[in-house]
Image (cartoon, helix red, strand yellow):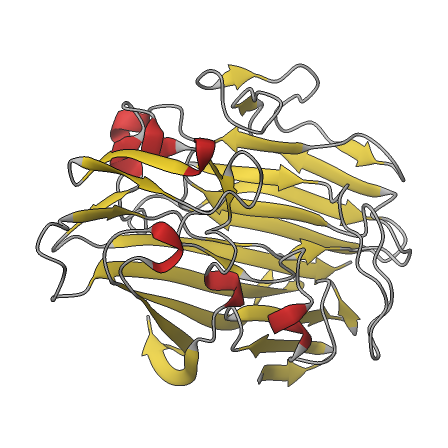
Length: 340
């Protein structure tokens, strides 16, 4: 569904995964996509634009320990771990909507999905919604277009007798390419933090927030055709005890910004979330299909606002992802783009 279109600006979404299909500024679609919405169901192994859940990123050993007094086995679709909600996570599910609703005085497109108890091994039936709001505003004489999106998740009233809690970590998996080449080569990137979670060779954190070896916070670096490579969780809030389950009342922070000199396009990512996965797309390998061209390694980069990786299985991090009856999980995020 196309949400808005003016002055070369356009947004479009699809019901599979409540995915972002188009985010065009000055006539340039900055997100990788499929032209045919049907391809999001059976061709989207790279998660183009998708809403990721029930738990984004990796769960160690495809197992959640000590939840409802027991353990839960998940699909090991990123052997030996589970990734992005399992084999058929929320990015592959058909969401209802969109419905038009008013959020903070603006028209929003809202998608909803009910995830049943036992889906992909996760306990509890939960209701999730994502709202998309498009805005355009002048900042120092420059017209900037923003896509504001919020997630909200709660447990349904009726549950299995022994289920009092579950785990949630939702994000968006859009890939961005601000340039005019098949790869992200030439993109200038700036991250607001140099704290990250060191990983083992399966992508599971081995320690808490640590200073990255090569990244300097708020210092720009350039992405080349083949390097530098990133698939790391960077930490905005290094105090896990202070991270709320519903982060929407937290301060929105600009966590990453990008610029491409060939197109003069800028992108900022703002979020209330305590972390974000920065991925430079090394494993993209999508053949041409229909009107959609082939997408190769490093065809796009991701900035995925989220909670800490594998938080459900780390005692000091669990509070940021464990959702109990009567509670609400939430986050607020913004993609902002403009041309100079």
